[in-house]
Image (tube, rainbow, N blue to C red):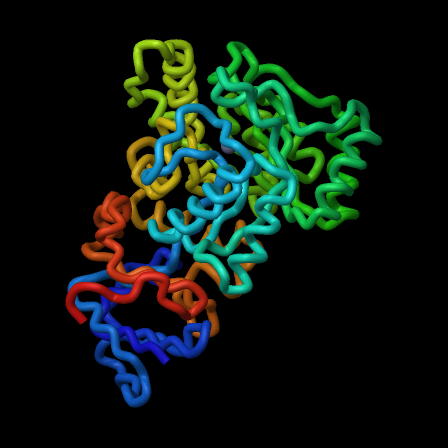
Length: 411
Ligand SMILES: [Zn+2]
């Protein structure tokens, strides 16, 4: 048993933090008491003094690319690595996310067909550190050496509804829980592509039907309004970007707000604007596109938030200028650009994180019976979410009742 005492508790629900104690038994939260209530007995428990720190649920990265190569520990110019290096580097990135407070990751695509399925098995069996992982299929082909990522091409599958069905069946048989489609392209990588619809309605309908039958979830990369609508009509569960949503797309998102999650993916946008590339790498087009995207997101985000659409942080980390490990920055960007309070951004990363993981009844909040995924954070992230961006501020990281990082500092 582990007994957190004297902590400021942010429970993930959105309620104000309160002073209190939390008892963890095996891998679950056994009790939560407010200060002033009857204190929990301390015998037989390891006591962790949370003095001066905030105890909060672990965060969920909702747009995870563990196989995108770059991290805060390792800069990789480009997106390609030799196969063996790619596998090890992906496992390393899983550990890096956990080191930075992300105890869950919803994959937005992998650079290998069964890479994340295998990684998840190693993590879940206790052999490797990493977040709870919902593994995805391959998103699109690894690119050639010159491109960051070829946003115009997708993982190998033929054209037409039957080919799409076969692709989903194959992904499901390989153990993927999520299949990702680029419903529209990506202008940051190929000018104009964000407005291009890459699939026909028949193909997307077939995807929706097969996904239901194969019991996998569909995720869509969708900038264009029509791509958003296509995804919504056909049962996509997560849509990234949604940049150019028109009035009809917004209405559809609002109508389906209990089924859909939207990932604005601000991290990559901000990183593109901030990047100072080497002279041989011209990012001027990408920067111009990022400016336009950000302008649209700043208008759209507050509208969706107000209407109760679930926006989730996660920002395409893993590119050379937007490395894995910097993921918590998305929370600050929700506050800076989308009209979120720090508390609302934290709820999006914790409670909504539990929801996008499909574990809303046991993950993402500090409640009796919930899984013990906890962070002990120096400072008060409900005042300043940027506190979460330095891993040195994470005094303890617990996943499934076990310390990944044992308590440091006082207590
Ligand atoms: Zn992505």
